[in-house]
Image (tube, rainbow, N blue to C red; front, side, top):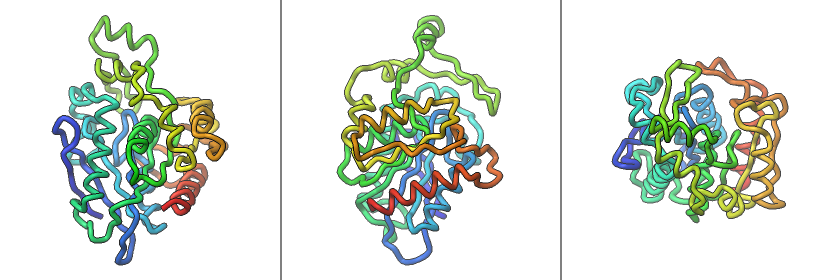
Length: 276
């Protein structure tokens, strides 16, 4: 595995781990993107990368530049000011920076990597980020979302909190921390600008997109997957993972794959194999 970093949005670092398959390559690369309050070492992300590598893909899982995680262990949220400064446009900029580095052969191990026909896999709000990024690029051939949102809009409570406090406080159930969603994230999420429109993004992707969602997801309703698939058109039907919650019944620390996880990973690999 190759560990490295790139310069991301607003000059902050994108830390990543690149898992390579056995063999000389060149391999197609899948970029794996976490969601809100996520990080590259959470739960199943290392196992997703290992599974993709076993299937013959290079897998790059990243910490988005403004997720606030510590850079040494990659497990604890230590920079909540950085987290507060995050916004959808930063996440898209980070993904462009990674894809640009792959396309120009700047990363260590580039001799084993293809420089086009990339795949993107995003979880939850990371699904939104990968869709918004892919719609702007011709070198992304396949996109997979796990439990993705269908809108970046925040509840009205976020607007009220913004007026009262200047940010929207959210609780991290895992760590007990109160984390602040900043003004830019809320304003971009509430914007009607086309660059944040997931309907336009899904429509532009068409059959490049595979939408996976658990039917017991309590964080993002199944209706979000159905909406994304409808926007993408008749060639994209959501794959509903029966009995799965928002994280395919996995937890952090990771204790092993669940049947739901194995179903989602196998479907993702099949989609990437069909497109890359």
